Length: 316
Figure 1 (tube, rainbow, N blue to C red):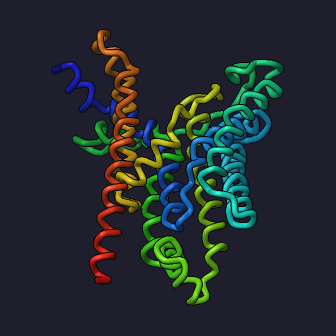
Figure 2: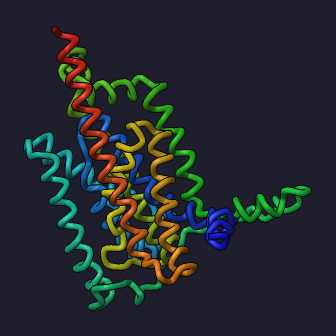
Figure 3: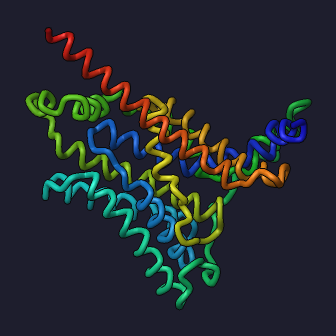
């Protein structure tokens, strides 16, 4: 137990948590934006997977930032595709989302085989690039706390720092701008916002595009920093966990960040615990985020039912 506590409170574990949380946080923010607009995006998993492969393939031939932008573009394109089928052709958005996930599962394997000359499992034959880490070693010059700050803050991906900024950018957009009010209004009461002259379908379209773009950044981080390269089904359910984090975080950017951090801690524990206690399988720890997602869905269902009851009572 002492060994576990020393590991959990070490700088190395903190770095691992940041690494595991970053792709999940981007996907969670994407899921939050689409959910608040009334268009639940269950395709986060597929968007991350397609964006990860896109980023890896592009990084073979272009600089890392172009590859990241390509991943973002792939996610945004899938968001626009979902909006087209849901809002223009009136398909159920849940079914459209699952169709994207199915397309990602099989399509990435096919595309990977074409890009690598037949390898359907990994992109080991592709010399892909990585997102650079931010070097803050100069902090070590600060008296007393310098070395500690360096070990905690230095070496993280540029995208990890971007994720922190994005949380507060999303919060500012949602609660301090008119367009954020539009988005929340469309999700809460679309009939009233449409009567006020707000284009409901346009707002939901852009929310799905933004959701896909954020999931795309998460996929790029996963394939260009957490792992250098693409592996079949490498997202491993992170898109679905992100949906649980949205609900567990009370559909608020700060709450979503804390929920994503919680799931990131569990993923980091799944990495370190088997090394400390060989009799505890890592797979058991990895089931915790999915169990938490299940509990979050139950909690959300209970809250929604309570809200409906209160609205009914208020009308009596």
